[in-house]
Image (cartoon, rainbow, N blue to C red; front, side, top):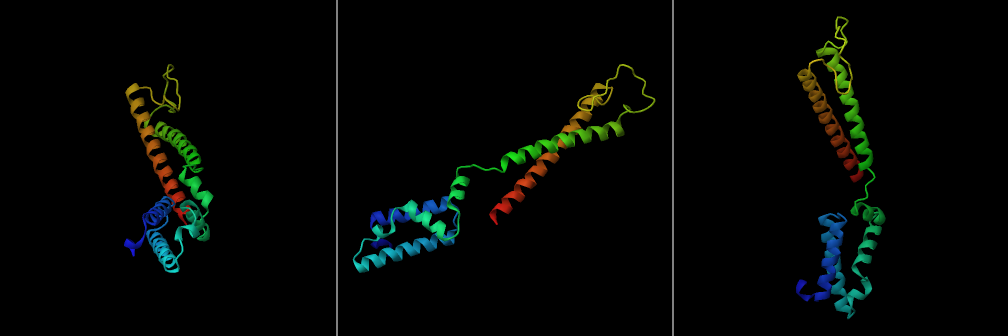
Length: 173
């Protein structure tokens, strides 16, 4: 039957299948559409009609197919253009988790590994700052700040990745 199709009919089927691929229609559904189009063209030959005239152009055929199968066409177009509203909240959540984790990590390291809050700490020149100065020795302070940054970066990355994955799984349902 493939040899019996004209060039325009083969091109029409090819364009329809490419557009269905863009909209992430499954391979099985695309094969079904291809088979239905081939049968339509074959029946049109048998009745002496032009099969392309009854179908319209390929984009409108794809739009009709998506609408009849319950796919929100406008939502799919928006998704293809990359307008995702989920990225901005994930960014804010990731930054927020990073800041909170960094501050909590600095506080825990200050309480456990430094003498900053010790009553016997009588260094008058030491100015405590939870963001960047938690120990009186510069090398120890640098190590503790790098540990806090690493922990915060690791946790915020993991949480953001898991939230993104959960949102992606929820969107596919």
